[in-house]
Amino acid sequence: MKIHNGSLYWPTTIKQFENRTNFDKLDLYDVVIVGGGMSGALTALAVVEAGLTVAIIDKRQLGTGSTSANTGLLQYSNDIMLHELIDQIGEQDAVQFYKLCYKAVDDLEKIVTRLQLDADFIRRPSICYASDENDVEKIKVEYATLKKHGFPCDYFGPNEMAEKLPFSKPGALVTLEDAEINPLKFVLGLLQKVEEKGGHLFPYVEVEEVFEADNVIDIRTSENSFLAKKIIFTTGYETVPVGKRIGAVINRSYVFVSNPIENFNDWYKQGLIWETKRPYLYIRTTVDNRLIVGGLDEDKSEAPYSQELIQQHAETLLKQVQDLFPNYKIDIEYAYAATFGESIDNLPFIGEHPTKPKHYYLLGYGGNGTVYSMLGSQILRDLIMGKRNEDAEIVQLDRKYGVK
Image (cartoon, rainbow, N blue to C red):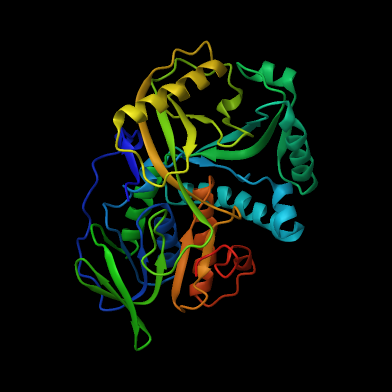
């Protein structure tokens, strides 16, 4: 599958990729992780720090899949609002899931700090504005629901928006203590730490078949076989080698990254901006003062090959953001399209396969993928270590929409 196409921004912010594989593989690993992106890197860190031997294998160079096109938005609020999720799965589980997402943002910051990663992690508020008057009541209900359950948030009416931003809308929900990150710097930094802690990294190795024999997982690849006690699939939006996703929708989205802007003095704390309509427009800034603008989602699973089509969508996004920020001189410097996945029930797929013991999955589908990867890595670590994790049931694979 073509995961992304066009001119990517994040790879320009790092040094050249390195081909790692500087060691002999073990005869038997405690865990083999298939996929070397955000979910794979975070899970590998959790597993190796728990004292287990781990290998990551990826058919590409590590970090060059969806991570290179990741938005880098870290939010506790989800594509499905809390009051809507309560209606779907009940108050207790919905609130707990939101708490997991809130904690995950904190945990990501702790990893950056503890491992001294250069990942451009910056705390930001998120500003979700009502796209039109019809959505004002919805965000007011969400504001009340979040406040009731102790989540840090605020509400801006049109006058307050006009004071804090270059534009005004009928209203906005402001969630506090969110963050932004450079996802590629973060993942490559994580992988380096995993390697330093004894993990083995194998780029350009593609899984072909997986067998179980004598209580061991036999993973046949394009290079050679790997033996493991457990296997974890963190394959993102690719088709999983074993198992079938039920209720997963694979789409594509468009992004452009601007020239550096002189200043953002009129932009409230350079908050992460998105809106209530679907598909939604989102806007964030970078450490070198660029805008990252995305949206125009399409129900097609593969990134388009046409550079002309990508540029046309980038120009449409440019018009939308220029309407919001009329005083900014904005040019398109990077433009790309990327595949992304969503689940029908708006929850990630995390846990052990219901009929294949020792097969685990972390598929963080949705607009909050990095946060899902963080919380999912902790759930999987516990499950693999034989520890009970009460939160695992919320995102388990054995549900109507899961992995079969």
